Image (tube, rainbow, N blue to C red; front, top):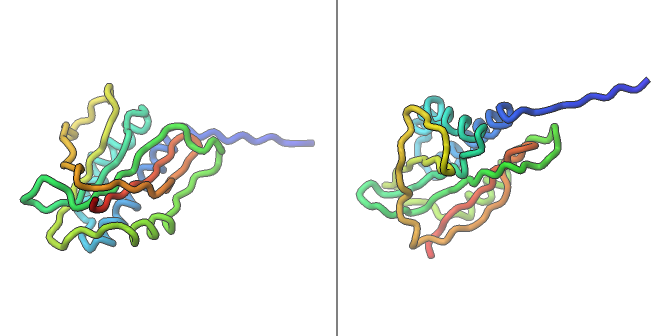
Length: 169
C-alpha cells in the first residue's frame, strides 16, 4: 500500500512567512547600524506589517525599503531594498531565510553616520488595494549612491525576497 501526501501553501501562509522574516532582517540591519529598531518593530506590529501582508497576498508589494538619512537633508546616506518577486522557488515545502548571507552583506555595506535616522517605505505596483493608515510618499534622492545586489534572502514556493544595499558612488 502506498500513500500520497500533498502539501499546498496558500498565498496567505507564504505572505505571513515572508513578512515575518522581512521584519527580522530589517530589524537586524537597523541594529547592526547601531540604531534602535524599536520604532520599526512597533510600526511593523501595526499597520506596516499588515500592509506588507495584504499587498503580498494581492501581488502588489514590489519592495520594502529602509532609508538611512540625516534629518535635515533629503538625500540618503545609504539604503537597503528588499525587492519582492512572485515566482518563488516552486518547491512546496521549501521556505527559508539566509541570515548568514545577509550578515555578510551588512558587513560589506556602507554604515550610516551616528546622527542618521531611518524610515521604512513599502513600494507597491499600480492598482494596490488601499490600506488604512498608509499614505503615498516619495523616496529620498538616490542619485549619488550605487546600488549593489546582495542576492536572495527569503524564499517560499511562491514569494521571494532579495536584497540590495547602497554605497557611495
